[in-house]
Image (cartoon, rainbow, N blue to C red; front, top):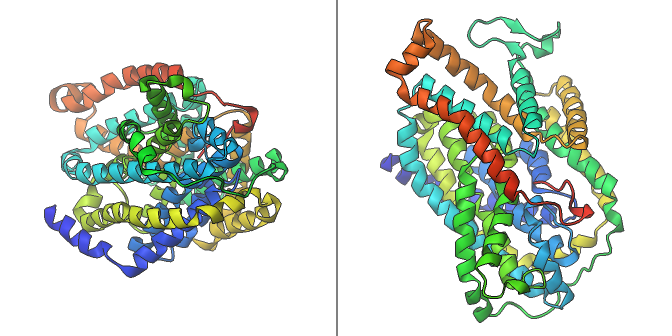
Length: 505
C-alpha cells in the first residue's frame, strides 16, 4: 500500500486538478456566503459537472465546494447574524457581536484561519488513519460487513433527531426504496408496479438532488431572504498576531473534537461546532465574554465544524458508508465515476484514493489564498437578491438530473423526491436516514444474503462458532444506538432564533 501512496502522490500533482479545486473553493465560498443557500445545495446542484471530468479532477472539484462552502457560511453569520449553513449557527453567537463593535474583519480573519487549521489537521489525520483502517477492513468478509452496515444505519437513525421513531421510519423508507427494481441475488422484479423504468431501480442522482436541493430552494423562498437588511462592508482592522496566538489553544481543542465527531456517521458539523463552542466557553478564564463578541468563540466554532470534513471520508472510502449528507453526495460522485467505495476500492484503485486524500491536504493552501483575498468580495454578496438566483438554481437542478442518463424519467424522479423532501422537512423528518437506508440497502442485502449462504441455514450457530466478531457487533448495535441517542439529545443545540430554524448543510 506504500507503493500506492507514492503513486497517488504523483497523480495528485496535476495542474488541471488544482485549477478545478480552486474553482470549487471559490464556488463553495460564493454560495455559502449567500444567506439561505447552503453547501449541501451547491454540492447537489453542481454534482453532475464532475461526471464529465476525470475522477482526479471531478471529485476534487466537489471537495473544493465542500471546504469552501463550510467557511462561506460563516460570512453572513458574522455580518448579519444569518448562518449560511447549519455549521455556522454557533459562529453567530460572537461573530455578529464583533460586527456590531466594528470588528467584522477580525471575526472573518479568525474564522478563515481557524477553518483552515481545523481542516488541514483533520485531513492529515485522515490520510494517516486511512492506511491501517483500510488494511483492517480488507480482512472483513460478508458477515462482518453486513453487521457494520446495520450498525451504521442504527447510528444514523439514532443521531438524526429527538424522535428516534422518526429516524427509524425514514431509514426503513430508504431501505424500501433500495429494494425497488431487480433482486441482485435472485433476479426477481420487486415493487416496480409495472413500470419498466423502475426495473433498474431508483436512480441515485435525481434522488440526491431532489431531497437535498429542492427543499433548500423552497426554504429560501419561504424565508424571503431578500428582506435581509445586510451590510456589504467589512469593518475594522485585520486580525493581529497576538490575537491569533491567544486563540491557538481553543483552535487545537476544537480541531480534536471535530475530528473525533467526523468519524462517527450522522453527527456532522452542527454538533461539532456547538460542542467546540461549549468546550471553549467552559475552558475560558472569562466565560462571561462569550456571546458578547469573543474571538475565541468564533475560532472554536469554525475550527470544529471544518475539522469534521476530513474524517467523514474514512467510513465513506473504507466501507462505503457516508458520514453525513455531503459525503452521501460524494458517494454518488464516486459511483458515477466507476469507483465504488469499500474494501475492494483500495485493492483495485488504491492509488486514486490516496491521490484524492493528498489533494484534500494540499487544497488548503489554495483555501487560504482564495479565502484571504476574496473576503471583501464575498461580503458584498450577503445583500444580493435571492430572487435573481433561484431560477438559475432550479435550472441547474433539472439539467443536472437529466444530463447523466438523458432520461426524462429522471426528471420525474427529481420532482417526486423534491416533493418528498419538502414534506419531510415540513414534518421535521431528517432525510439523512432515508438517504443512508437507500444507499446502504443494496450492499446490506447482498452481504446478508452471502452470510445466509455461508451459514447453510443455521445463522446463529454460524455466528457463534465461526464469526464471533459479527455476533459482537450485532449485540452492541442496539446498545450503541440507545446511548448515542441519549447523549446527542442532551447536547443537541437548539435554534438561536426563528431565523436559524431548519438551517442545515
